[in-house]
Image (cartoon, rainbow, N blue to C red; front, side, top):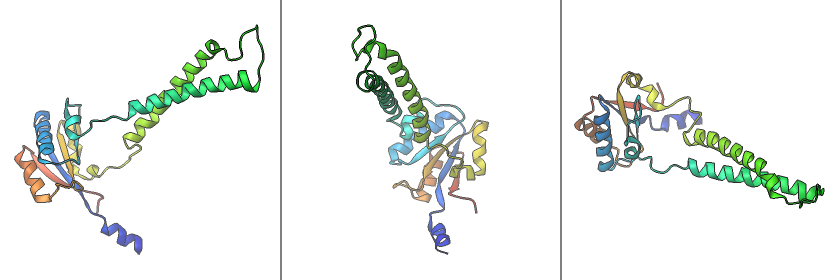
Length: 188
């Protein structure tokens, strides 16, 4: 019973989904929304639109720093593994070379750096994109299937501090939305 009470107390409205008929109108509406103070919004388009990511609020990308950290950790780990085995754990003098002969350690160091950088890129990208995400509330809107048919959408989330359903609805219509639709968290 407690679970049912918690589920019904959750807000049902995810946000308002506005449909636009051109990428220019979507971009302009997103700019106007940003200037009006809306911060929690997302855009859905059938192809990339230059400048839309910045307008919607994607400015900082953590992925390059994660890949750098992963590559550095892989290279350091590879070098340490070879140094420890050759100089500390099992020291054998081969042909008079020093135990810590770094030129012979370069290939494995490089390969492990590349391996960990690529694995970090793959896992980091998936995590930063919120994957795996088999479900998103905008899928509840029957109009959303039009995205693949050349329509453009802007969703302003109900969790935005500026969000008030009537004012946001009027704002989107005033800025060129062909239609505005409520998006719920889950279907009834």
